[in-house]
Length: 79
Image (cartoon, rainbow, N blue to C red; front, side, top):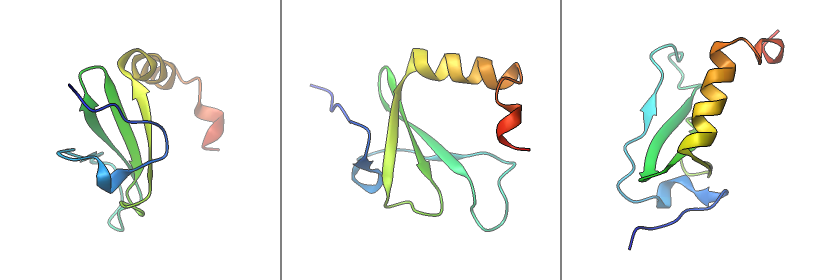
């Protein structure tokens, strides 16, 4: 049976996670990293705190978020 992770799970305890950082991140690792943790789930962590909590989202939640980001729906969050 595949492990199910919940929000707040310690990122370092997610066994076998291959964390991916955006190429646009800066030299001091200030970035959000993502890893597939289950067939239908991905986890996000703050690269500055790799042992800290992870947020876990379903594939459909991530698809909706990425579509919104591409459409500029969150642009007001960075300015």
